[in-house]
Length: 421
Image (cartoon, rainbow, N blue to C red; front, side, top):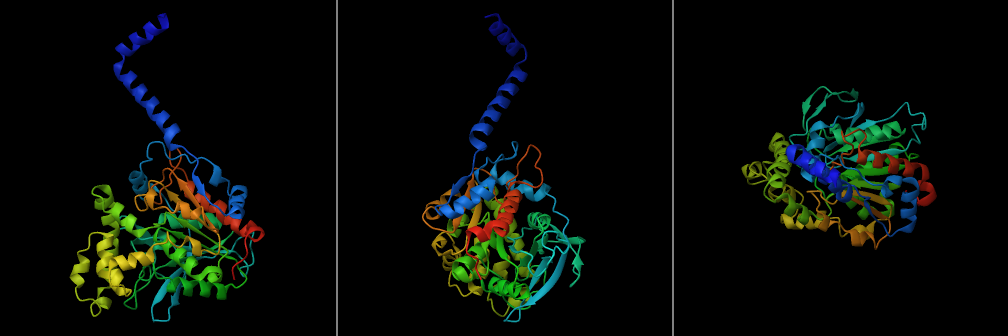
């Protein structure tokens, strides 16, 4: 009884400290009980599931989001602001396309790889970045055919986005080669009135065939982030066993574009920061190449006034790729209804609170009914966020998961999967 009375007297004397202590205790309790959880692994393919549990242990381990920044939008923005990219040198190559256009390929050749010294058989990752927002600064030199180092401000070289640099850094550490596929107009002059979209896989098909012809003895895996994940998934669904890849990985991919658009147009941070920043990046890229499109588009100024991704897609992307409406384009771009078409294993990492791909849009039921698909869904993580640690450390969650899966595919995939040729 005396202890209780002393405790009450202390609380009365030091009310501020008491409130702070109670708040801290409640916050920690909430964090441990509702935030720190094992991710959902949706996978009906028992062979693939066994492969993941045996060789990718993170798929069964708890994810510990940064305790002071686990809100989805905060984590999404914070990662893009504070994260530093790995020190990567690329060798640039411009790949000509059948229509007269060109694509910039940035190679991290990993010439000094001790595990795979033979370049002809060194396992290779084809990496597809997402959209570039105006707040995502990249630094680079524009020297063709030489190793590139960071030099000046630019927002178009997607291979220098920090998340791409860190993914490439993980592959480099493990001894693998990476080729970053920059979409048209990103890092190389746009030569024709054609850019890119989530539904069109012609450019990726050309890139994969080129990489396979250059290194026919090298196993290949695809990795796509956000928009890049959609393009990769659409490619794998269309090509099936002829994809030329052993496996794929998609990170923070929007499964149902209609649901993603609805979420991103919700007033507040989603619409006025995330959506508008990406739309500004799209408009800025269009403005730089406007002279190529003036004879193909009736109202160029209307495009320049786009303030959301949907407006830009309605006014530019959809008509440029032959769609009558943005709805028709979005129906073709969606991947949630193409899970059944996969013929090689694909691991997809999403966060339930991703503002670009809400939980209700995730095809978890489809993943539980089809082979060659494993969905790993964390309760928190935002969009390409996945920070963890009291002070977000490197490599963060998604980089470590990528490294485990990548290493497992190239070292143990032949024991579990049929190699796609």
